[in-house]
Amino acid sequence: MACVSGGTVKSITVDPNLGGLTTYVGNRRTQCLALPAGYLGSSLLGGILVFCGFNVTASKGAAIMLIVCLVLTMFWARNLLAFCICLLFAGIVGFLWWLDGGKHLKYFTLFLGVMSCIYSILEILDMLVLRKANGSDAQQFAEKYGIFPAQGWGFIWLLISLIFLVGAVLAGLAAFKSDGTGNSNSTAGAN
Image (cartoon, rainbow, N blue to C red):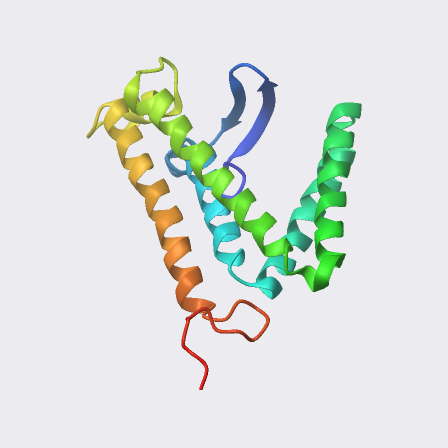
């Protein structure tokens, strides 16, 4: 998000115990968009996967993007464990795509989307709302933009994440009234 909003990323550090740290340089707009991007971006992408999980064809589209991301990660990470995990997930996606015309791929896509949304929601609750994490993104956001304290911004980000999840479920139900096989989801009796 820092790059998209006109900033420049200086470094990215991944800490298995504390998450990650992205150091960037940018203007006020860059900071406003980049600080909540980790939490809200995970919820948004999870919501997209949840939406796609209601239809086989949409799940196949999401699976293509997922495999592209996994392949890029395999070459970028240059770590045997990351390579093996990405290969495993790509294999699962490929197998589910092949199995029974991909009907089971939508459940895996739905699982990944819900997992991403719920993880983001729980992380926001834990780090930003229930306990005040000094140096957190919400703390930095509150220092730069005021209006609310860090926990207030965390609560707002939590509401946005919940809206992404609930909105994706409702949109998926509305958009895909068929299960992808031509069968209606309703339980109307046969004549």
